[in-house]
Image (cartoon, rainbow, N blue to C red; front, side):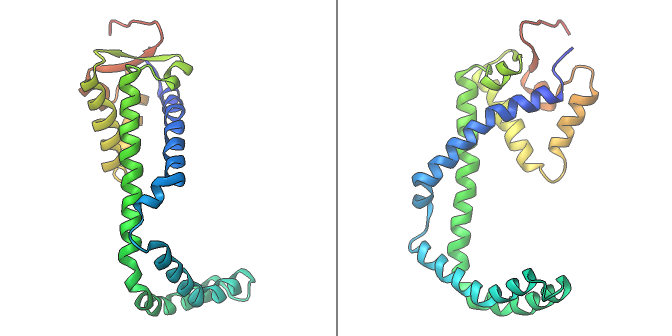
Length: 198
C-alpha cells in the first residue's frame, strides 16, 4: 500500500512552513525595502491618508452600528469613484510593489524548495517525520519535474480550475495512490523501508 493523502499533506506542510518562515523573515528584515519603488513609503502614506479621509468616518459609523450593512455599502460605493480619481496617481507604485512582493515570494519559495529537495534527494525532514520516502529514480531533473513543474507550477496555474483537487482525487481513488507528478517523473511516495513491486 502506497502513501495516502494525509501523510503526504502533513509532510508537505512540515517542509513548507520553515521555508515560508525564512522567506518572510528575509522579507521583513531587508528584502521588502529593496523591492519598494522610489519614494514608495511617502506615496503609500499619502494614499492611506486620502483613504482615511474618504472612508474612516463611514467605517466607524458602521462599526458603531449606526448604519446597516446595506447603507454602508451604498455610501461606500457612492464614494469609491471619487476616491479612485483622487488616488489614481498612487496606483502604479502600489501595483509595482505588490507585483514584486508576489514574485519574490513565489520565486523564492520555488527555488529554496527545489534546492532543499535536491540536497536531501527527496528525503526531506517532513517526509522523514511522517515515515515516508520518495522512491523510484530520484535525480535532480526528476525532482525538478515532480516538485517544480508539476507540483508548484501546475498547482499555481490550475489553482482555480482544480489542479490540487485532481491530485487529491488521484491519491484518494487510485489503487497506486499516484498523482500526475508521480507518473510523469517516474517517482512515488512509499513508507520507509518498503519496496513495492507494483
